[in-house]
Image 1 (spheres, rainbow, N blue to C red):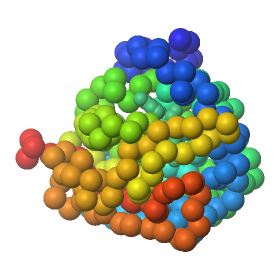
Image 2: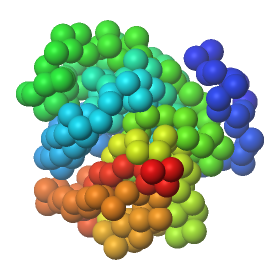
Image 3: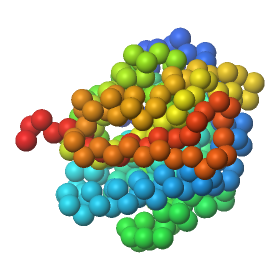
Length: 263
Ligand SMILES: C[S@@+](CC[C@H](N)C(=O)[O-])C[C@H]1O[C@@H](n2cnc3c(N)ncnc32)[C@H](O)[C@@H]1O
């Protein structure tokens, strides 16, 4: 598989899992059309909660450690990376699907107007308000990486997001839990993170293809994070009553910090 020009080969190993015809079939245009062509209430709520969480975290902690951030399983969704902008000189957008990588490379350099509504949610308070050119900032900081979250190095990033990925790539609870662990362990001890999950999903369709999900609830999300997260982990359940995807029961948002066993 091709290695992206933006990849730092020393940091993320080459993709070894070639058995992913499933992700080759992911249609980013259909996914954006179904999920992000307009701003939904749940996504706006998530952005507000995450923006507040990151702001409060960095009021108390040194922001220098968060110069490098990561969004895991970015797919064609830019808002997690937008949430990271104030604290990162460099944001890795990692995905396994070649089609999503192509979409991300095309759109991080200058995203379409439909994403302005998402930025506007964040842009109501500092430090987001201090960013006058979010398109330019995202273009300057984004590093689109074709890679596998199960091959991420440990303890590399100072802030992280993972949205609708660990539960939306498998129907196996073990693989889900391992994905959550790999995400949190890729962060530095003490680093803040936000992770979002579809609740109660048994799978979803993108374009003509069906993708598996692991059905999770708040308890499963909390249990998957608890061994690796500090004790102040918060779990929020959201549902605006508008089911974006067939057969899911709402969204779950987890905000926390990687446990720091060195202290
Ligand atoms: C349901 S989509 C979520 C996309 C986006 N984060 C969002 O918020 O809508 C799941 C994404 O996970 C990616 N993915 C699946 N397995 C992965 C893996 N092992 N490593 C990295 N990305 C993966 C897929 O390519 C897809 O883009």
